[in-house]
Image (cartoon, rainbow, N blue to C red; front, top):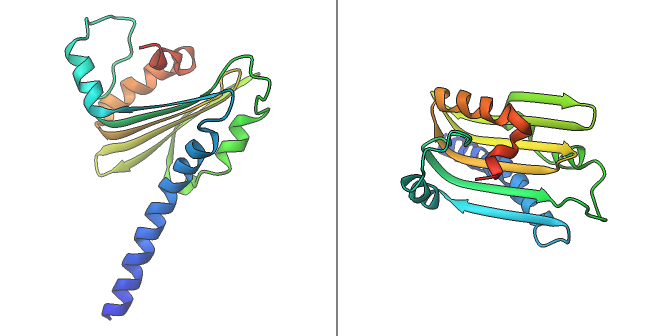
Length: 166
């Protein structure tokens, strides 16, 4: 019986690590490549910045308990542009680990926001954008449903570009 419980526990840990591994792999694959920019922002830096925020109404309100934000974006005018960035990255993500929170499709732009939940909190947002603007934004932390709703509403404006302009 102990062996079976041990095997099940090991399998659950492996599955959990694999879901995160695919996102880590995407960042590792494009990091340092010409035409791509990766940014990682620690949650403590966000809390410090919030102390100095001047209540600018054009800014999107970030949820309070963010542990990390990672951004991978493709620069404009990149000769080595990944033609179908959205399709290239979405196939590498284990979508069974996420719930679809929002999707926006236009002629030359596609945006999908995926979320992970734990109880009554969101623990991860994953925004994938392809077309005119190619980017992945991963936000990890603990967010209430109200914070998530406001964040999603703000993200819809200008395809989430207001999140990066901080």
